[in-house]
Image 1 (cartoon, rainbow, N blue to C red):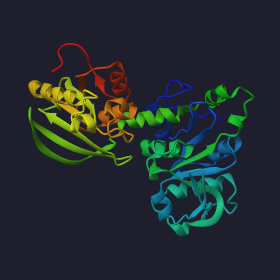
Image 2 (image 1 turned 30 degrees about the horizontal axis):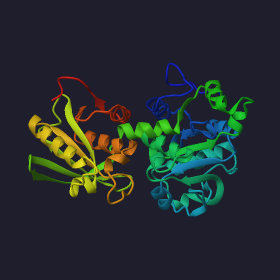
Image 3 (image 1 turned 30 degrees about the vertical axis):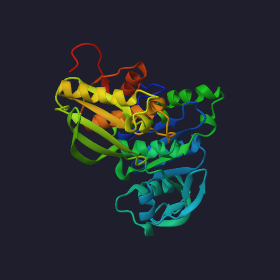
Image 4 (image 1 turned 60 degrees about the vertical axis):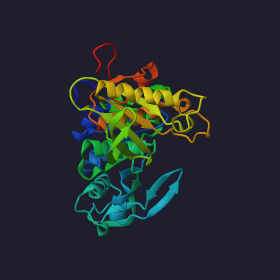
Length: 361
């Protein structure tokens, strides 16, 4: 079977918005890891029919799995059956109103649709059965990099009913006698499927979703002037973050931004082993002189030694947190006070528009 794509052209690797649109339109999507070691065919569970089941059984592993949230599994009273290697299967199920031959394509399709139905109840299912629910990490691929989480995220982002996805791991990469590095692309092309790398899906979420929460906001007088101070909490790991803002940064035009990794030895005790305290004071003074800008103050991702400089632990996660805060503050364009190629590249990768040169205010 070949599925006609909603896109004009099907590419072996599709951007995340294209893959999401395909699933929202009722078309299956092929999900794979970057090295093509694993792949799965993903369908919107609420729309699954017996032809889709036949396709998964023909090309997949033989198991029809359903990716759902822990709250959905609890609501349907699906107890854990197997937990191994961070993978949690519940007891298998059949719909009690399914085809009398519950192992049939029609019966399995009805079971999958029932798992996604908003009016489904625990008593609607017979246990054990021939469909295998999988409980996914609450943060999807940002919490666990796996096929089930990718299917779960795609269903949520596509807005499919119940945010439930059916998937089947590709059996022997689709049965193609080709090198592993090309099997997935060939399978996608042969069957007209959009395909997406799990890592690309994760990058899409990091670029587009708000993953910090404003906890507190107050006025903070300093030696160089008064700032609006915001306290943030990371939604994924609970990390405490902080920003200092002066002026209307949500207005049009580039906003000067300083990103300062916390350094206890320098910022608090004025250690002469680093220049962190001087950089912090200079950045705050610059923002006050401009009358408009943001300083993002970030804790390092790893615990520092008492005398260790925070600037030595700047990594991608530092710029991700900064990008998230700037997005929450509605900063559309960023001009870095202390620019670097690494900072500019990382911020852009997380969806920030970084501008350079004159005219930044």
